[in-house]
Image 1 (tube, rainbow, N blue to C red):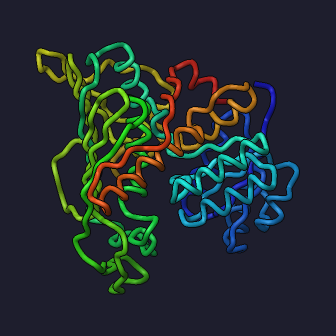
Image 2: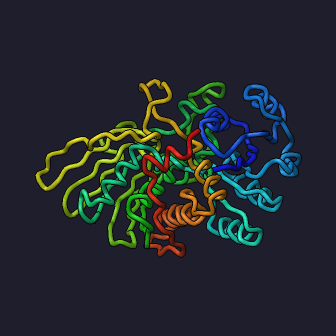
Image 3: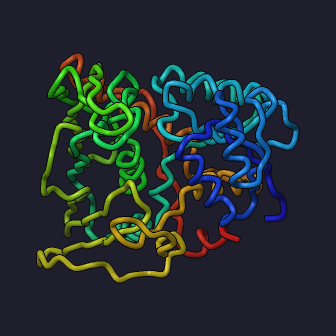
Amino acid sequence: MTKELGVGIIGCGNISTTYLSLAPLFKGLKILACADINVRAAELRAEEYDVTAQTIEQLLANDEIDVVVNLTIPDAHYPVSKAALEAGKHVFSEKPLVLTLEQGEDLRRIAKEKNLSVGCAPDTFLGGAHQLARKYVDEGGIGRITSGACYVMGPGMEMWHPNPDFFFLPGGGPILDMGPYYIANLINLIGPVKRVGAITSMASETRTITSQPRHGETIPVKTPTTVQALLEFVSGATVTLTASWDVWSHRHANMELYGTDGTLFVPDPNFFGGLVEASGRDKDIKPLEAWEHPFGRFNQESPQGPRANYRTAGLADMVAALIDGRDARCSLERTLHGVDVMTSILKSGEEGRFVELTTTCTQPAALGIEEAQALLK
């Protein structure tokens, strides 16, 4: 890889610090500028990370910017990504890519017309733990995957987030907020989804904020906060996915996949690392033999202990794909299929019927040790 692409960030909230701090780990890209509707927010980020603060209009007109990273709130993802494409920039967006399939198809149309690429988080399925799970599946470790169960549940965001309103409005909710991590990893491990069915509900029509600075304020709930879905994959596998912000505690594993020859226990898809376990027909559950995957190495401390965090890996892989002329793993095709899965789940909950998906995709290429190392400086 000989070329380096210039990157500009639009949206200077909390997630921008992750991209700005981790981008220097990767080859092929350099963050040059940042912008935000709040100019002062952009100026503060620019000072902290030694990049240039610009208005959104200036960044989109900047000839040194090849790729725009869209870190705005979900409701702004579509218009900001569309504006970037129309300005001739490649786009990498935080999840979800868009809030409707129609918006995603419009981005696909513009990208095709202008010969541009669009990629989208999550990229956590590129982590060492999930790629170890992928390797085990590909090698037939549990035989053919026939079914599975996934759970992402908690009490909600109003206890810790300073402004949790958008989590409980259309475009928010647990399936669009946390679902992308699980669905991207299921596509990584199993492939595309054929149809979905779901029952959705909400525990309360309002929530009371207990975080600061808005402690005690009541906010409305306008989207389902518990989603129980059934996904039928093109392969024939069926997986249940429960996503809820109405659960105070539980003992469910994050992800279990059941095969003709055993069971695979996959750690939290929200993170790059974690313990991968499996059993064969003997029912003896054991950790898989560890491997030295670059995106599984601890590089951060957290309240729960050391953690592997390589967010920006998906952006780096997209940049490498642009330079090398190959398919990006966090591609528009796959993320648009993920949007189709999530919005179809919500549609099924509203209409009380199974919904056939109108999109499909291929599994991303596996990211082994050498492939991951090639993305790092």
